[in-house]
Length: 147
Image (cartoon, rainbow, N blue to C red; front, side, top):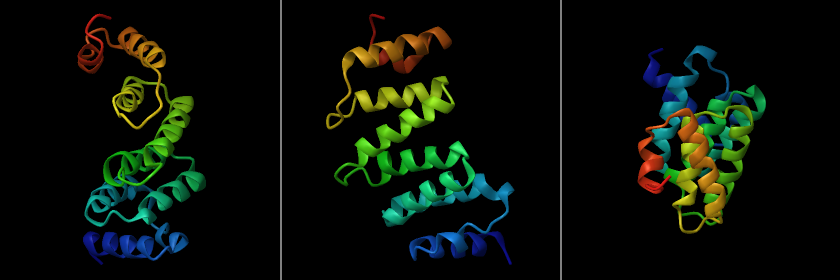
């Protein structure tokens, strides 16, 4: 069976809520499956993709699944009430496990979203932490040019 057909079968199972069946793929295919789900989430804007990402995160404790959930909430189904609040919650959980420049930058993304309750004081603290790791960080310099 070719790779595209396998991915399509997984996507169909996810959309039907058959998460247990959809999760039966080779672990080495995780990155490809995550990418496919993310791309499909733009076309379909189906809440089951987010739910499957959370299901897989709880099952595997692989942070890539939680990052997928955040990406779906922020960029695919952000029009849904509460999507940004859930994404911010998940992003904070990600930071507990992996505090790096990329994940910290994602926190600054929330600072720029008008509907998110994110204090400037917290954003500045995160920006300073990013600059400790990456002194020339363009994102921080764009948001806080005087830091």
